[in-house]
Length: 256
Image (cartoon, rainbow, N blue to C red):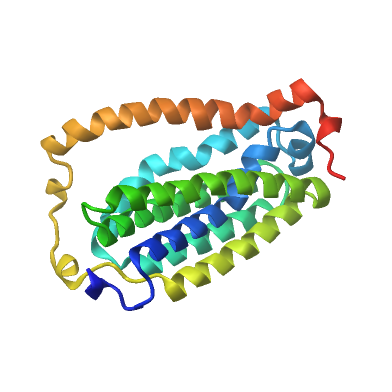
């Protein structure tokens, strides 16, 4: 496994920390949308209705139904590090696109870009973790990455809402884009390349990537994941700003 690392100081644990921090940073633009767009004040600021907000918040997930499969195949055949760095660059671009123009369509295009970026980011990160781990530390490293991811959701939501409240939605997205680009540079500079020469030379037929034995395991997991994600991200996260505002009132959430 040491032969996979061209950077001697990048142990599996440090690699996962770097992946987790970059993933957390990548959420700055996306999490801000979930936090502020359901609030009528911010929706009016960018020129969208509440119905449009619902479509926008679901667009990035809808596009991933089309991109996750091809992206997985790409990672089977191409180096991981440049693809991961490029995914953060694409995520940064999506935040910039949110600030171009006014109304539904710039935001819609930006959400498509973010959906593609997240496919490359999450699948690539999971692939790299599997390649640097073994049966003794695979669960620990995946848990470490998930911890960074969830911490990133909380931090990005708080950071994005505070910046948007003080300086406006567009400034917050531009600032997020700049921070994400810095994370992309760090990934490209410090992440190890984990695609070994053996795996690169081994071309897996597409017909073997989805065997019946794999479907028996994956389908039940897909159903459970679909239900939990629909409730947690599709309903609760998307409407949290609305019901918190209804419970406590908007004036109590003005920052001093």
